[in-house]
Length: 341
Image (cartoon, rainbow, N blue to C red; front, side, top):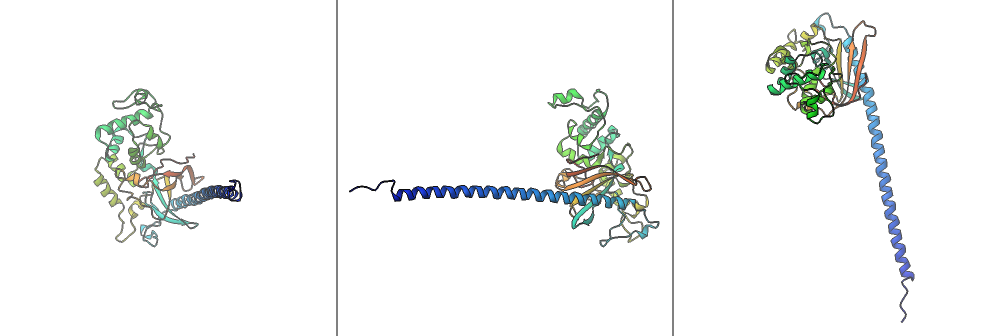
């Protein structure tokens, strides 16, 4: 009996079935790839739109904070208006978060008096050392770090007692040396020899490069800054802050006493974060070690603004940052972001 040829009808049907399966598999892979690409593009577009909305809302929040700062304080402190939660409508630059909504976007706006921070370009070694020790750095390490900060900003190449100049950076394998010039941003602290990421997060909220004076305005200073400048303990500084925030009159608005002494200025740092009530530490308590890192997950916009009622112009945005992972308390400074002067 003659055997059927492999090329007969049955064999052709088998080959056709294999080809059909391969085509189906190829189409499936192509469809999955197109779906994944479309999903990625949709996500990127949504993120871009969300970021644009937040930028617009944050700009509005900065303008709203400036308007509040330009408002003259009431003649009688007991006439300060309050919101539904009993909070003062007159914002103090002490870092307290103020919930505000713009175009259905909930925001939290905080205002800080820039002169109430330690200026990295003006502070002397004892103040820097005291501040570092308050933030949990051992005394010997604090002395060394203070000298290294001074060596970073001074114009000479002479090494301080515990400082660091170019040879010390080279010995650590770093591709740069001491700047020998003033700090232009707080972020430069991360380049100073011995400043770890954790220490930077703790130190950044307490310092500035824009105050232009070694004198710290203690009226709205955080507890670490107050303790370092006054030479007291953190507990004593926190008690002093609690006392300054007490109402002048029984049952009055908290912060009336501070409001009666003015609101600092003219430089203010305004921070606008997403969400109505961010998880923030008491602005007077200061950030405990590691606390800044836990509060660093919020995307925010931050601006340094000069506000002078009656000036021409009445306010000026000196720089604006966006997209930072920044500590929210007590000083909320940017770690990374878009910086424009």
